[in-house]
Length: 581
Image (cartoon, rainbow, N blue to C red; front, side, top):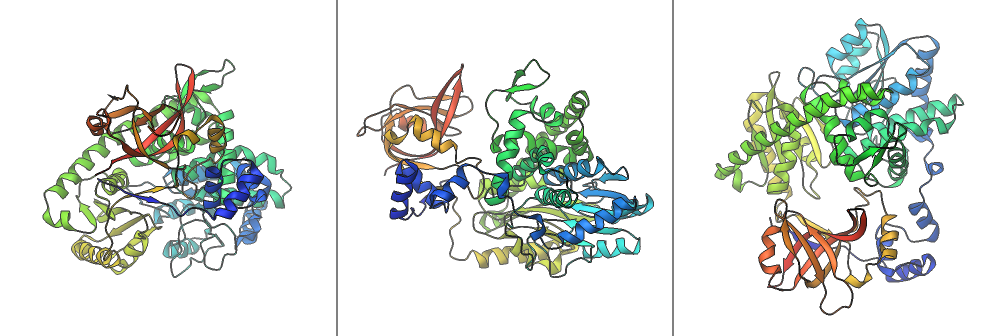
């Protein structure tokens, strides 16, 4: 699919020049900072040198005092507590964090992850019944619960209180829980709104520790779980999340907990043991590594069998036990990949065979036998292929259940909300949502959703965009330039890895197709001294015919490091190539 290149508005020239001067950096780097809202020396220090001292006071969050009071009451009175979370990475990492923290000094505690197929997303009646039957008096719900009005009311009749720790948008009615921690509540004054579910859990234990004189330093060991949730749940890596992610990555790179080490042994990142029972990575782990190496495996447990295995993996302190669980989870991940490929192929064939689906502004596909555990992944793949708001549906426990994914600047949660009278349940955020409906409402829902999308995208051409931070001459790229650029990390939503554009480059010789349709390049600019620059363009082998003919072309790319045979060099990771007319 052809992509539209869009260059972001450049920073205020005066602010760029001033920042370049006070920081003694290239103006192109200063421009990147100004684009990110960093305009002063003090703001630059905060950006480049994250500090745990800059985390917000957890008691700024609405109901935090209530939450701590209820937990304190439970602990003092030796009440049984259940830590309850969703089955994805954010939910299981949050449960692992909160459970491990309180379990260290309160024995009457257990954790619960609902079954994706038997109970569905979020809080379930079955989970509440189990809590009541096992004498649980307090449930701490993580990454779910903000819309579970009927479930919380039901729990109250069973003598079970709830503390809800969620980061999703609330509905019109707020559940009657003992406390609700969710910065997205309209009347919550907490200054940072984009915490993950695990991040909310961290603020909970931070608040409890403050009241009970537990040193903050003892909480740092949990930041590896927080950064995994930040990376995998695709939340903004800005503000407080940037601080938590920075220190969480440092922790994982220095000494990963046994469960993470066991999972990483299935990746190419693990080089060898350090001789002391630890591990050595082939390079420093990044947010991207967590997204593609850790997240899918943790998710696979809940997709194929049970998310409880993910929690067990994350809480164990025994490496042998971690290896045993990780092997099982990795097997699930392999099975998940097979199912993902099969369902994606079937869905694409369905679209190709339907003129109505091909011409629609949205994609809604349904098959009753599709595996519920992979429909979210399939929705993402279809969105990448067709670039339209997409919903993939299957049948589960008598209801049609679906996962929705969106495209840039389209709020799919609001589009689903516009169909809420046809739904049994729904929830999510701007770019992803989940929903369920009765089979008899399927046709009406498909028509309503398509009409809603068509209306809101009227006059808008659905073409994927490549957002380019700035144009850059190749001779601006140096070791010093790259050393500063690396400090912009960790990268993610709200602080994506800078994407540069250079026009009129040519093949310096030696370019070739490698692997499965990848281009290995060596490029120079004929009018600028310097180079050549090594480059890689994944899945763009079809461009080779024109490139080898020395035809000038434009590139947009990330500047990265590449290690080969012990040598580390700067490499351009080319995301797209365009030739002039």
